[in-house]
Each structure stands twice: as structure tokens, then as C-alpha cells.
Length: 276
Image 1 (cartoon, rainbow, N blue to C red):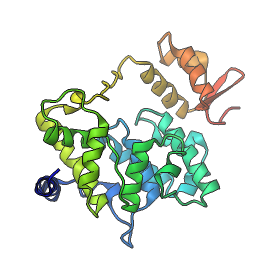
Image 2: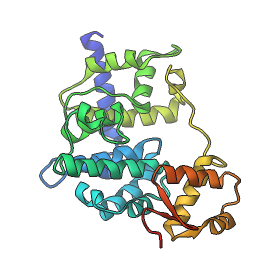
Image 3: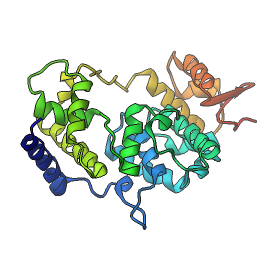
């Protein structure tokens, strides 16, 4: 990419952010000393996986109030974590976050690792999530991709193409990476959100695009119903059946128990260890 093309592209992205950026998002607010809490970035990034920002904001705020530090989260019962997460969906993320906090507390003295290769060892943290944490928490040069970033680059550099590979986008991204990595990725995210609203879902042109499954009527919905009900208190299978009329219920309970999300002792099911 020619220097003038890089400069023009950068100007467009940053100008949009200056005028329309979501500067007030709670995980974008610095601490009193101007730094950004890596723990809050970790929480926000796991919450934002496959979940829109407006739904995440209130859950993020209540989660941080309940578990203000990574050590608080590590020492909390899983049941409390799942209850606080309830309603956000994809509840495995709550367990992954809790497990990650345990690793950080035990192995890193409560300090989030600063390198991608260490972060990806944490439960639920893939390569792109690790890259986002490094960029937002530590402002270090790193390339990563997600749907909004993909949207921006397809719109500007791959219009009319089919099956665009992420590798091609990552190569371009590396050439335009500025010194202020944190602000640059925030700007890309917000510009990508605006492009989705005005140009449609350009991610369908990506080779890596997969359509998100429908939630209503899904097995995932049944899982959420089970966890929400057990968050209100222990229950028998019959008690759950009275409120969840779905033939997949027993299989869902078995899966959740195998994953460690719930426990069964005798005739009762419960979150965590809250079983008589």
C-alpha cells in the first residue's frame, strides 16, 4: 500500500472516531492514573464475543461491581459468577472467565499476562481475543481481526471480492498500524459498526464467514433457561420440567453437569456447589 493511501485511509478512520466514536464505553475509560485495567479489558472482551455492545454495557457494570478485581473473581463461587452473568448468553464464557481468573491469581500473582502467547493459554481466550487485550490494555503493536475490523478492510480494499481471506486483511492491517494502537483499534471497531449499519453485512464476503445460529428454539436457549432457573435456587428434574417444556432438557442437564456448570446430587440440580 502506498504511503499516501495509508495516510488517506488512516485519516478517514480516525476522523470518524473523532466525530462519532463511542468514547464513553465503560471499558474505554482510563483509571485515575491514565492506565487501563487489563482485568476490565479481559471481562469486556469475553462479554463482547458474539454479543452486541448495548447488551454488554449493563452486564459489564454489574459484573465489575460484584467482582472488582481478578482476585475477587478467582475466589468467588462459580455459582455467583453464573448468576451475575445470567441473561448475557453463551454462559460458557462466564466459566472461562472464572477459570482464567483462577489461573491469573495462582500463576501470575493477579497480574494479567502481557503477551499473546501467554494469554491464549487462558480458558476462552483465542488468538484474536488475546490480541485485543494486548492492544487495549497495554497499547502494544499487535494485529488481530474480528467482524468490525473485517468489515472496514473489505469495504475499502476488497469491494466486489469473494472469499476474502483473513490473512490478506491481517497483512494490510500490519502495514497501517500506528503508534497509538489502542485508539486505532477503537476507531476501526466503531467505523466498522457504522459501516454495518449503512452497507449491510460485508462479512459475507469473507472466506471465514459463518452465520450465527438462531437463538429462539435452540438448545442454547434451553441451556440459558436451566442456568437462569438454577440461579434462583436448587431444583429437581421434575421442577425444571414444569418450567421448561422441552424434550432436550435431560440431555442439556447432562451436558451442563459434564462441563462443570451445574452439579447433580441425589434428586437435585444446582449451580456450583449449592446442593443440599
